Amino acid sequence: MNLVVDIGNSTVKTAVFNQGELVDFVQDSDLSLTKFVMIAQKYPLKHGIISSVVDLPENVNALLNSVGVKFLRFTSDVPVPIQIHYQTPHTLGADRVAAVVAAHEQQPGKDLLVIDAGTCVTYEFIDKQGAYWGGNISPGVQMRLKALHTYTNRLPLVSSEGDVPMYGNTTETAIRAGVMQGLRFEMEGYITHMLRKYPELLVFLTGGDEFSFDTPIKNIIFADKFLVLKGLDRILTYNETL
Image (spheres, rainbow, N blue to C red):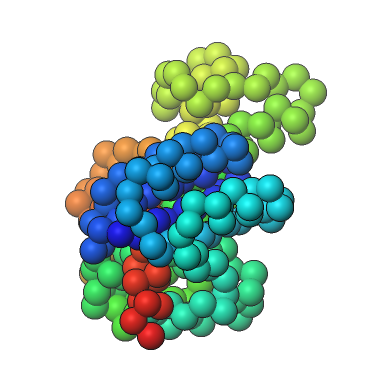
C-alpha cells in the first residue's frame, strides 16, 4: 500500500492506494496533520510520496517522518512517466505535473486539457504522445472574490455560496455571478479554443471548486477530484520500478 500526501496552499490531502486503487482519503484544513496521522496508523504502509507547494516547518517534517513510512519527496528532479517540455521545470508546481500524469495514465494516446480549479485555476496541455507542453495559471474563485473586496473601496466580500444568476440584480449577486459565470466562460473558452486545434481533445476537471457545463462540451469532460493524488501514486509506483 502507498501513502500519498498532497500539501497545498489551504489543505493537506492524504490518501492510501493499493495497486493503483484509492482505498482511503482524508483532508486536513491546516498543518496540524491530525487526520494524516490517523490514516497513516490505520494501514500497513511502507512507501509514500509527499508533494508540497509550501515550505514545510521542521515540526511538520518531523511529524511526517514519525509514521515510519519511507517517503519520496516529489521535486523536479524526480523521474516521471511523461515528457516535460517546460522551460523552467524547477518552478513547475508538483500538483500540476501530478494532474497531467494521472490524466495521461487514464487516457493514453489522447490530447488532453487538464483543468484544476483550486486556490488557483490551472490549465495544462499534454499531447497524445505523452509530451507535456505547459499551461496557464489563473486566479481561483476565492482569490477573485477577495480581490474585488480588497482592491476597491465599497465592494463587499461575497461568499461563493448562493444564487448565481446570468445577470446580478443586487451588488452581492452581481459579484458572485461575475466571478462564477466569468470563470465558467473562461474554462469553456479554453476548451473551445483547444478543440479547434485538437478536435479529439478530452478534458479533465479536478480541484476543490465544482463547475457545471450546460453545453455540448460536457460530453468530453471527465470530473475527477482525486486526479492529483492518483498522479502522485503513479509517480511513486513508477519510481519504485526504476
